Image (cartoon, rainbow, N blue to C red; front, side, top):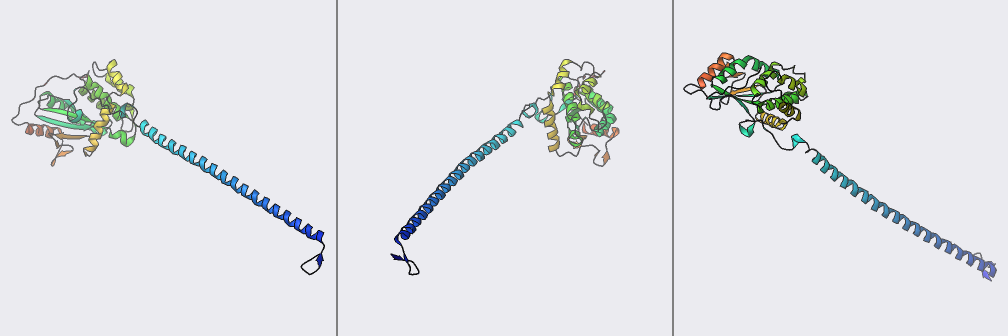
Length: 292
């Protein structure tokens, strides 16, 4: 017989039973360790699959973001006005063909005017000086180079400046810019009223110029044929550092609102042109189409 820890002898069957119980406990512990190991392996496999899926998702999102940027950039370049194709009106002159000339090519002096058809001060300028400017043109003393801007659209919203300028360029295509230009300023809406943003209004006003309201003119207005040209002209105005519209220069010298210390008025305009033309021949004048 064997002794227990207290010195008492333990029968053999109890010893065997004790050994058997210890073996069983060892087996259970081994099974538990094996189960835990398998569980850890399963967890690791799940994490690996999760990482693979997550990486794939991130890759797809990154690709989608790149595609989105490409699509956004491509989309921003679509459309007629962004295509880079600028259609200048017939007979446009000057740098980049951004001026519409009225008057003799060989006139001794040039009056350059930057205007916006929605600008109320431009209308005041035109209504005060219209007859004088036409008289100086018709006698070959000056030619006028008109440049069109769209600053009121930018300041107040709407599209009347752009739409009216495009319509005026369409009138230039058939040699009726000057007459239609005067009609627009004589019928200018209030600055806050974007009536010129309606092509139908511009076509209606063309009826005041003999022979202008044609299918060709209407198509040019409605299609915005010269929109890109007008926008390029406005960019030139902004880059030119001018203070506002109207801007008027005689032979490159600013004369509005004054020339030196003398204010611009009808008498001074005539005087300044006469001084500039002293000893020079007037230009050869070709009569321009007039309004009805």
